[in-house]
Length: 348
Image 1 (cartoon, rainbow, N blue to C red):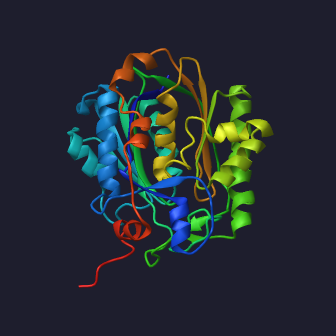
Image 2: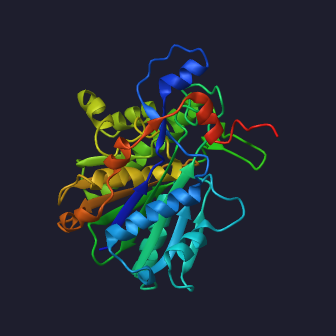
Image 3: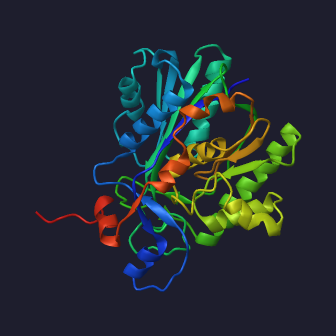
């Protein structure tokens, strides 16, 4: 069965608390949580490359065994191949499949599907998927909005997909598409444009994610999952969707603090959300535990049912756990946050 052979993450050292963003705008908002802030010299490529190196080490795999590299990002280069840069950087063969997937955080699960199909056809043995983003929200955007500067953050995760040496197997996958577009950005836009808040929340994210979750449960004939990992553009959106997926009201806050819930620790990582959240779960998961994973972006979703197998413990000594990035951090003020994100530039 095709599954995850290894994984790795990389998160910036710097952080800013939500309350410090609010203070900069003279707002008395006491909301717990913080987000990552990229250093001035960090890019989606550098974050993704570091995550890849951690994943390769965890998988204990030779670069020449990688048959495809997919780089997923909504903040990468407009015209350039970051997937090719990563492939050359880690030393793969020069005749492998290269793919740069962008436009939506869903592209990570799209890449997983592409890898699964290529592996099942016998064309490749292993595929590398990198999800990396540096998201920037408009200054002064409200905390209630997905895509705001409160949650727009930076981080990367990478996964090796294959059939041999897996630590978690993909038992089922379903997809769904809808015309709802929650956010978009053209070449002329510095910050993402957002649709009506309640509409894109209720009829976009919540409707699609809950619907596809139910479809997957029917397909694999399972209602209860040990872990639930959702795309996380906003904590409130996630909380309401978990309720729609059948999580009892008294357990909602517990689920928001469970492994895989990263919105309050790191912010919205875009394409980095699913691989980093998955790593957070696998860092602590035990054999036979199940993971319901649902991506979302541009009105569409993919849902995966993943079962952890007994090989997971044999590779624990090779991981760079997500928790290590939670502990190693330093806080910056609002102006530094703007400078490091390239919003505030020195006049010359």
